Every structure is written in structure tokens, then in C-alpha cells.
Image (cartoon, rainbow, N blue to C red; front, side, top):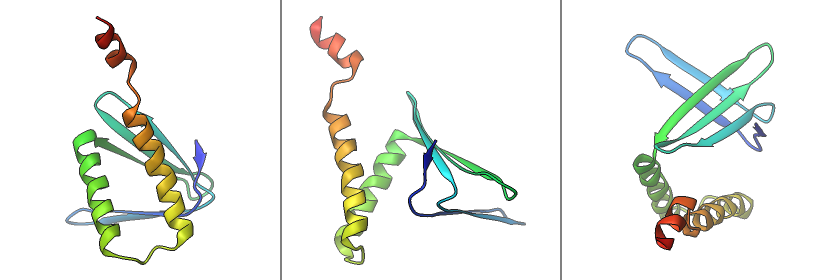
Length: 110
């Protein structure tokens, strides 16, 4: 689990109830890359313990990233510190997407 550097807020709305939770610097997160999806887990320990898990399939995650990029182009409200954090994450993702996976490397050798 990794520490959260900022904050996350979550709400789930059902017809008869709403669940809301906040996760701050006392919380931690974990990302698991799986064959069909990415699992994001955020955990807050202590007396007000809570945990969320979000499973995102890759097409949806790609659409979310694309919409995030398009939204950032339209707005200039992020400061340089937040932009640097996003750039570092995006650069790591781009590097991983350019690196051949072991199964792709084996297929090329055949």
C-alpha cells in the first residue's frame, strides 16, 4: 500500500441511500494490474475504517484518461505542482505502454 499524497472523495448513490467517504493523507492506496482490468483500492484505517475497490476494464480506463486530457486542455486551473504530478504519472504510463510485454517479446521471436 502507498500513502495518499492528497485526497480522494467517493460517493455511491442508490435510489434510497447515498454512501460518502473521504480518504486523506492518513489513508493509503494500492493498484493491481490484472489481465482484464485495473483494481484500485483505497483504505482508511483507524476508528473510522473504510475501504473502496474500483475495478476498471482497460477500454473504460483509456476513455477516462482521454477525457481527462481533453478536460485539462480546455481549462487552466491546475498549478505547476499538480501538473508535475500528473506529468510524472503520464510519463510512467507512456513508458510502460511502449515497453514490450514478455508475451509480445516471445511472439516476435517466433
